[in-house]
Every structure is written in structure tokens, then in C-alpha cells.
Length: 105
View 1 (spheres, rainbow, N blue to C red):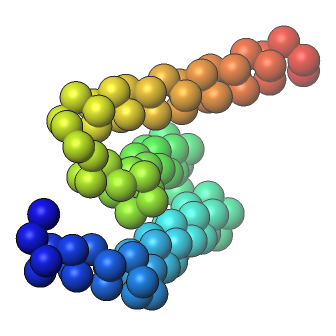
View 2: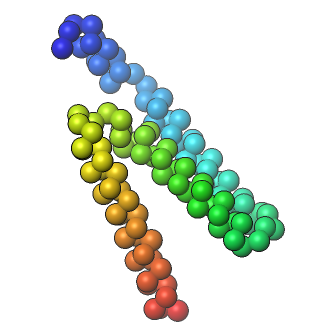
């Protein structure tokens, strides 16, 4: 690693985490937008669900790139494993929630 790259790395770690702050505000804005669409608008159910699922997918990508540093891995295989594990966890949470709701009500 050259001296110039070492200085850039130190500066990046010492600076204000703008990337995380932007990701936080984008995630909050998408959450508020989904809430407003669900509660504030009188759209048909299938349209509301389609919009909310689209916003959720967009928010997941924002979180992958802003917080989980998908593009900063050492090898592409680590990035793919991380994404697959994230999809698995999301599926397990959603499926588990639906399963619990289906059998407890």
C-alpha cells in the first residue's frame, strides 16, 4: 500500500460518517413514505402493497450499500455470501411472522 493510499484510508476513517447519515435519512424517509401511503391515502389494497413492497426492496438496497458495505468486501464471493445470507434472514423473519400470525389468531 502506498503512502498516499494510507493517508486516504486514515482520512476516510477519521472523517464524519456522511454515508451512514445519508443512509439513515433515506431509510427514515422511505419508512415515513410507506406509512403515509398505507395510512394517508385511499388506494386499493393491491396497489398499496405493491408500492410498499417496492419501497421495502429499495430500502433494503440502501441499507446493503450504505450500512453493510457490500461494495467494500475483499472478494466478490464474500459479497455474494453476505447478500444471500441477508435474503435468507429477511425471508426467515417474514415467513416466521406470517406463520405466527396465521396460527395465533
